[in-house]
Length: 258
Ligand SMILES: [Zn+2]
Image (cartoon, protein in one colour):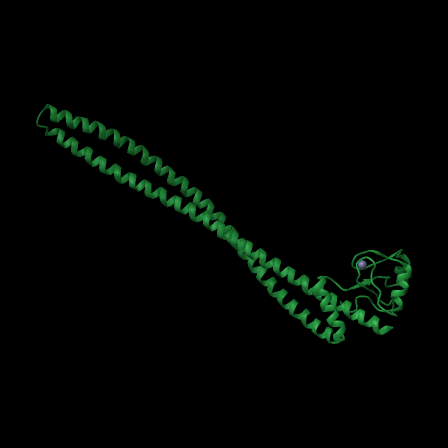
């Protein structure tokens, strides 16, 4: 019954097209996932860079505040010195002297702190510069990669569209009932319906095959079942996975239109 054999061959080809489409779609998803991951990573690194930038600015603000404080204390100190010169009496003099002592000490502390804060600015700047360089290098690399991914997605879209057209054309040659059965199987079982059993393309290859295996689940097909399946008097199923066995006729080239 070559009609059954041809139908199974057509369904098997349809399966190959569908498996191509699925694979292309999976690759496309991976590309998009990767591009999204890169975007998230860039966002994260950008956040770190902004934190370092804020820390640097904060160090500058602290330094400038301390410097203002220092200037204020220095002015006070000058004023106390002026007042000391025109002290009215001994107690007045002592009071100014005490003010001068405490203010001098405060000025000394503030000078030290100002220097420390200046060094902190340098450290923060170094950290910021390093982070900025890292960020910019990442952005450059990830932009390249994202551009490549976007181009690859486009290519996949085109390939999927082309394969879908192939499918359309191919499916038209299959009887609606057989197509419906195939579609139902695919939807329900989420897997292939026809299993191709390879018997070798050439006599040489055929001699080398010791046992025949289900093309999908790899289970050995008993010789008797092989003979039955090749008679195509009706459909025979793989005893292991239940898929319909399809044995391609030897005369035909195997990769006809995969
Ligand atoms: Zn099987």
